[in-house]
Image 1 (cartoon, rainbow, N blue to C red):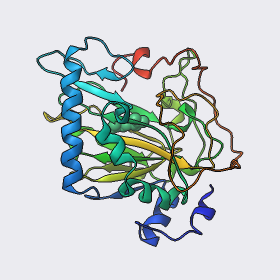
Image 2 (image 1 turned 90 degrees about the horizontal axis):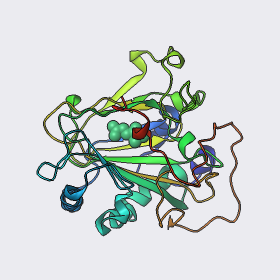
Image 3 (image 1 turned 135 degrees about the vertical axis):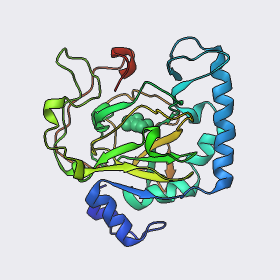
Image 4 (image 1 turned 90 degrees about the vertical axis):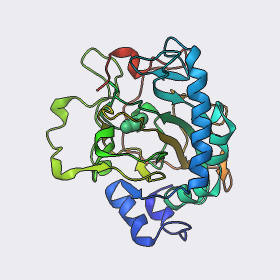
Length: 294
Ligand SMILES: O=C(O)CCC(=O)C(=O)O
């Protein structure tokens, strides 16, 4: 669904100016949006996953390990599809606290695509170079939104997510490197336009929530602080937005309509999108191309 059609529906969670700011800037920050009871539940679920990762010695389809990971001191960069690893995550992602919020920016019919939990353990080595998300999972339109929740909050030294204001209205950049690897990183010579005054660094207390349009240029530095910086990142789209390609982070829940009703017709935005590699026979994750990723 296109922004002008989304805006024709009444808002459920956001004030009108917040909604407009999301469409103008390509992102919106809601300080302390998720209440403590939910955060407690998510923390307990995350602790279980961290505990399970003790038996893992190499990054796999679920756990991306951070340097120094061991059974005694589990250290994670990411958990892929946390909603398939612990029911609390799926309960949260399908609760109106999330689906009504998503509806305010994608329209009343909301579809789940995928999710990850970027744990970013303390004193870490891995960040995320400047990139755009949509070339990794192209859709028929640009409605997909990532809703990021800082479970424990995020300070400036914890590698906060940084976003280039208004970049969702600019071009999509190549996510391939010169050798043809899909590295999900914009080449430095494509970033001449990125001046400091355009960069928003998203910090905040526990439960602070970020809505991020799928075209927005963003990234983050490694977490240099002692404490981990868990950021839960479910992705939703309008129900009438359909992915062109298999998801790099698959889930049995991909395509579930979590609010409203399924669409019978697809919405098309004909601005071009670079296609990712053919992942039908397996996904080579970004972290497998090089280390550290930032
Ligand atoms: O966790 C972060 O700091 C950045 C995450 C990100 O950019 C991504 O997963 O696409």
